[in-house]
Image (cartoon, rainbow, N blue to C red; front, side, top):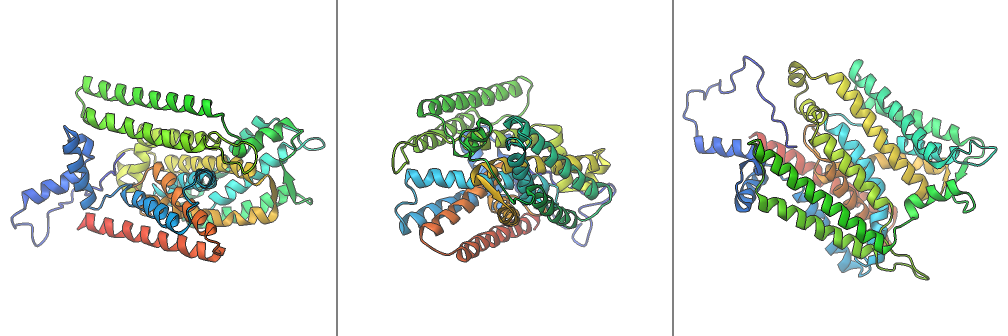
Amino acid sequence: MSDIPVTADPGENPTAGPAAGTAVDLTAAHEVAAAEVPPELLAQSLGQYLRAWWLRVRSGNSGVLPVVLGIVIVAVAFQIANSKFLSAQNLVNLFEQSTIYMLLAMAEIFVLLLGEIDFSVGLVMGLSSVVVAELVQPAPGAAFPWWATIIIALLACSAFGAIQGWFVARLRMPSFIVTLGGLLILEGIAIIVLGKNGLYGIGNSRLTNEVVLYDIFWGHFSPVVGWILLAVVVLGAAIGLWLRDTRKRRHGLETPPRSLTVLKIVLMAVAGFAVVAICNVNRAHFGTIEGVPYIIPIVLVVLGASTVLLQRTRFGRYVYAIGGNPEAARRAGVRVAAIRIRTFALAALISGIAGVLFASWQVSLTSNIIKTANTYVLLAIAAAVIGGTSLFGGRGKTIHGVLGGLVIGGIYNGLYLLGLQSQWVSVAVAGVLLAAATVDVLSRRGASS
C-alpha cells in the first residue's frame, strides 16, 4: 500500500498565504499529484509504469531502490575482497544468519508504521527462546510437546506486546519509555526463567521434541522437495495475482498492466530458482548437506502473511492512516487506541517467532546469550530503516525488513570473512544506518518542498 498523504484539517485553506493570488503552475501540480499515486494506477503499459515509477523516485519516494543498490554494492565489494563471499556455502550461511534480523525488522516495522518505536523486540525474542527451551525439557522438567511450547511462547509474547501497547495507547505514554522498561523487565524475567542452572539446551538427539526444535534452524528439505515447493509457491502466487487483477477489471477498478503482472511473476520465478539452486549445492566439508533450509520458508510465510495483513486488509489501511496522521484517522472514525494495541501485539508475536528460531540456532541458552539479545533491537531498527521504512511513520513495507536484514547479515558475514574484529562490524552497520536515515530525511524534505 502506498503512503496515505496528510491532508489539511477541515476548514483549512491549503492555498492561503501571501502567494495565494499568484498563478499556479498546473503542470507542476499535476506532476506532484501523479507522484503521490502508485504507478500501477496510472499506467496502461509497462513503459508508462516505468515512467510513473521514476517520477515517484524523483519526488523522494524511492521505495526499495536504495536497499537493492546497497545489496549489490555489498555483494560486489566483499566478493572482490574475498572470493568466497558469493560461494554457495557462504550464501546459504548468510541467508540463515540473516533470518533473525529479518524477522525482528519486520516486527519493528509494524510499530514504526505508527510513528512509534519498540526497544523490547530483542528481549521478547529472548523470552520466547527461553520459554521454548525450558518447557521442552524432559522430566523433571515440563516435558511439553514441541508444538505446545511454541504456542505458549507466542501467546506469552503477544500478551506482553499488547500490555505495552495498552500503556502507549490508553495512557499516552511515550513508546520508547514503555518499551525500554519492557526490555529491562523481560531481561530479568528471562534470566529468572533460566533458574539457578542458568543453562537450557535443545541438543539432545535422543529426545524427539528437542530434535524437532533443533531442526527448525538447522534442518533442510531434500533438493527435490525444494524444487516442488518453488513450483507450488510461484504457481500459487501467479494464479493469485492474475485472478486479483481479473476481478478488479471485471468491477471496473484500476489495475496494473498485464505486462507488469507477467514481469513480477517472471522475476519471482527467477529469484526463487536462484535461491533453490544455491541451496541445493552440497555445502558440507565432509559428507552431504544440501537443500533449502526450513527457516527460509518460515520467513517467507511471515513475510507473506504480514504483507497481506498490511496491504490487503482494513487493519493495514488503518495502521498506515494512523502513521500518516493520527488525528485525521481518529476523526475519520478509526479506533486508534485499539489499532495501536493490536500492532504492538503483532510486533511481539513476530519477535516471538524469531525467538523460536533463535533458540534453535543457539542450541544452548545462557544468561549471557540472553543479555546479548539487547543488541538485536538496534540491528532490527537499523535493518528496517536501511530497507526503506520511514522513522516518521506511515511509510514502509515488511519486505523492507527482509531486504534490510539481508544487508545487515551481508555486512556481518563479509567483515568476519575478512577477519575484522566485531567493533569494526558495528562501525560499518552504523555508517549504513546513518546513510539510510539521511536518505529518509532528505526524501521527505524533497517530497514536502
